[in-house]
Image 1 (spheres, rainbow, N blue to C red):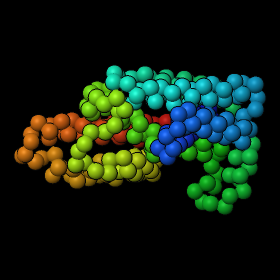
Image 2 (cartoon, rainbow, N blue to C red; image 1 turned 90 degrees about the vertical axis):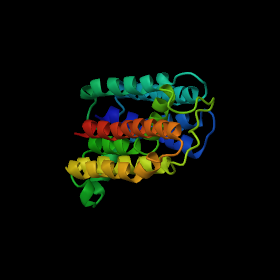
Image 3 (tube, rainbow, N blue to C red; image 1 turned 180 degrees about the vertical axis):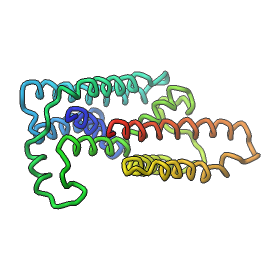
Length: 242
C-alpha cells in the first residue's frame, strides 16, 4: 500500500500548494517532488519501486495540469476527475506488488513515543497521511470539478464559485470530511452521520426562504450535490483505509 499512500500525498500536496500559491506549474512540481522524496525516505529504492515512483510523479504532474485546464475553460471538467480515478484505481490494483516501506520513516516511527503511532507500520502511516491530506484541499477541488462538469455552478472561464449567501464552504468542507473520516475510523459511524445531519440543519434556513424560489432551487441543487461529493471523498478514503 506504500505506492497508494505516496500517490495520495502527492495529490494532497499539489492541491494544498495551489491553494496557498497560485503559480503556474508550481503546485504539481512541488507535489511530485514531495512524493518522490517521501518514497525515498520510505526506502523504496529497488528498480520496481523507482519505476513506481516515476509513475506516481507522472500522475501527480498530469493531475495538476488537468485541474488547471479543467478550471480554465468553459466546457466540462471531467478529464481531471478521470485522471484522479484512473490513477487511484491503478494504484489500488498494484498495491499488492508494493513492498513494505522501511527506511528513515520506519525508523522514525519506531523511535517516536506517541501512543497513536505505537506499532504503526510505515505503509499504514503513509496511507493515513495521504488519506487525511486529500480531505483538506483535494476534496474541495473534486467537489468544484463535479459541480462545474454538471453545470451546477456559473459557467465562468475561471471556474470560480457562484455569488451566494452560503459562506464558509471551502473551510467547512475539509473540517467536515476530517471529522467524518476520523469518526468512521474510530468505529463511530453513527456519530459521523450526526455530523452529516447537522450540516443539513444548519443550512436549512438559507435553503427554505420563500423569496426568490428559482435561486433557492439552484442553491439547493448546488448544496446537495456538493455535499454528497464531499462525503463521498471522506467515505472513499475510509474504504481505502479499512
